[in-house]
Image 1 (tube, rainbow, N blue to C red):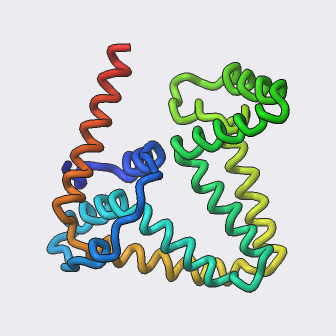
Image 2 (image 1 turned 120 degrees about the horizontal axis):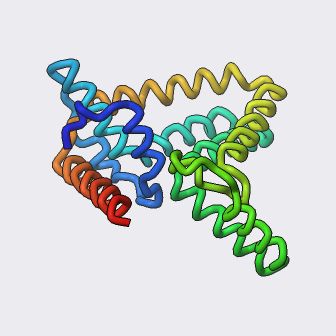
Length: 211
């Protein structure tokens, strides 16, 4: 897969639709080989490839940095957990599986409410041209859940005067992620994974066309 032709928007779409249940790459692979890119074009291609391939490692690194920053403040940790939840909800697979799991739990206690949640999600009037907008969480449009959760998280961070700490530790974490993604030489497994995802994308598009 030629990552130099992949735009930032396409990369974000791929990260939103990809399966996030895969375990992180091993430390041996994560820290295997580092070389500086020779040109700006190769740097951009490497950056996109590594962000996609090591996505789980980077998320874990960011979460660990924030946990280290607020391990003495339970309410600040709650705000970080809400923010991480909002980020995960932007992924289609996580949002759908989470909504289905909670709905099944509700069904065991209150079947009528579970039926109403499913009907609300099925009858929701959303523009069909925007495929990612059709994802719902507990019968509500995903964008509403993400906005409310993010707003609540930021409000808690502000109330506990943690904005400066969040900014510092997030900046350090993103700096480490950017450095690793820029210097880590893409290996054969990364290229094979990229080619496999490209094939799946083409196959999904073929199925949508035929259906």
